[in-house]
Image (cartoon, rainbow, N blue to C red; front, top):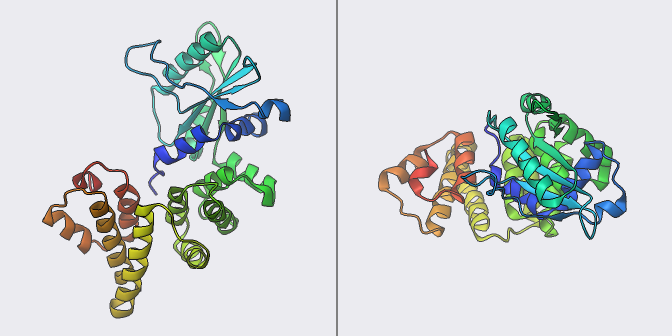
Length: 297
């Protein structure tokens, strides 16, 4: 399965500095008091002054008031990047210079191989940086330890980390309930339904149809088209073919709603596709691409 899109998850971290601070305490083992967690706030994450093209971390969190007593660089790693062990020390040095306080490097990943790779100390020659890494096993363990009180952000990461795990459906429902309550955005519901096993996703979709009407216009259109077309075609030509046609219609509807030009050949290629995982991937990308041609690139 392809890794989830980077931006929605990064935005999740950027908009919730207290969640990143809680990961530092619960997964990184830092002794942070509730009072310190209460001061968690975001700071500028650009390090353009260090080196010419702009260097930007996924999130920067400050703890302590009025002046920070601790700062953290938070990086979400969904794919391997050989440059990171050479860029992260620049982030740490730049933030330490800017805020005049100790700096921790927290790496969040949904891949076990990446978790092992980035947990290795970064040797500088005059010292070392030891990243605090939260991998898929750590994410699922934290979610299980939290039980019914699991934070919606952690529940979302746990579903993406182990979509076939025994608690995936319960966690998925908690994420969807958070979407209904406005604690998470519609794009997070889309991620959960796309990554869970088809049977679980279907069960959750049935549950959502009784409790939730998507608020985001593109997701609402995708939702309505996919259900209407999928059901109609499924009754006529079989469930699998109908589901594919419904998803294709939803993708074309989202692209049209965004005003993107649609070449006739490309539209026909989408309509003819019967590969459901590929259609799911296109559906996720339809709200993000800058042109219809980029959807299939």
